[in-house]
Image (cartoon, rainbow, N blue to C red):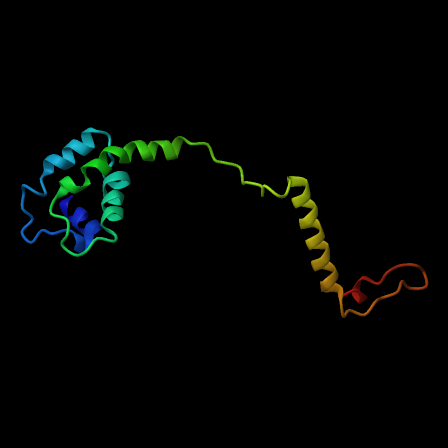
Length: 133
């Protein structure tokens, strides 16, 4: 587990000898007992918190304690929150948006027809499908 933590923390973690006091299993056990998941909370939190830190600037797991207390609750809130409907611009109603999109589709269709030779129906009134391209 410590190997994964050091992998997630990268250069920001200062531990030339992996001092057991600073990198104690006690912290990991406490976080797990508080509901943190190793892969879903601990590793991502360490990776996030160390992303922009200077090399060897973090000297132990105590640095992550506050973030680890909050991580399980944040994950559960995100998982339980309902998916929000896409927002409509405050300046455009849904109906106005549909009308605008319809106009854009029609315009694109008409542009695609430009430059094509018009075909006329045959004398019997039938359109030659092969001629329309």
